[in-house]
Image (cartoon, rainbow, N blue to C red):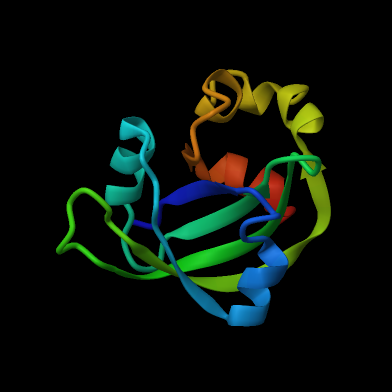
Length: 129
């Protein structure tokens, strides 16, 4: 079964545009224990939303998990492949105003960098049916 996650990134460090240019990257360097648990729970084929923090504070694109580096339990690097830019960026203010996200860690744990999403939340953010 495909899982869905949101990955937060500071665009001045690594933006969705950087991921699109590179095609693939290893998502690592996560230190928060809850975010690490979420990262360790990923599997190839899982669907991702890329969210840019900083001034943007918006979901901006998609990606997919392609492989895992399981050898390092402290830093489980997840290889991701760029997807497409979202039809429109979805701001944090819009997310917070949507009841669908009322109990989401995205809203309740603002500093969590790897957030699980339900399929419905993923579809809402990506505009997919």
